[in-house]
Length: 93
Image 1 (cartoon, rainbow, N blue to C red):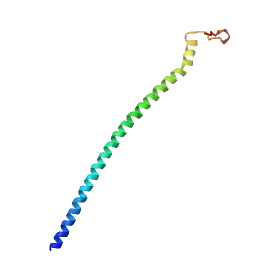
Image 2 (image 1 turned 60 degrees about the vertical axis):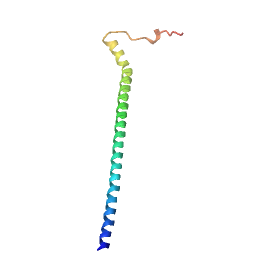
Image 3 (image 1 turned 180 degrees about the vertical axis):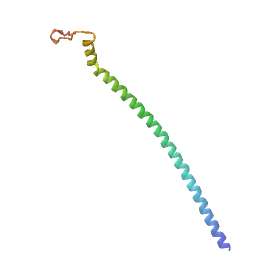
Image 4 (image 1 turned 120 degrees about the vertical axis):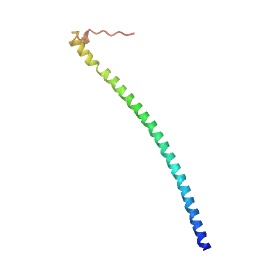
């Protein structure tokens, strides 16, 4: 009877230690998930900032390219005369 009681105590001690170890692993796992979520938020914000800058650069680029459209409007709507390359003088400084 004493041997049976001693074996049950050993089993209970082993089980309680296993529960404590698994509890620590659970806490560590949750903390790692928290850190990963924080990194994910930071990277997401950086990605949004990069995408906004990219859009702004594309808009600026398209505005520079659309100078030909402005020239065409000036020629048509305002009835301006096109520049003759033969009459253009270069100025050297």
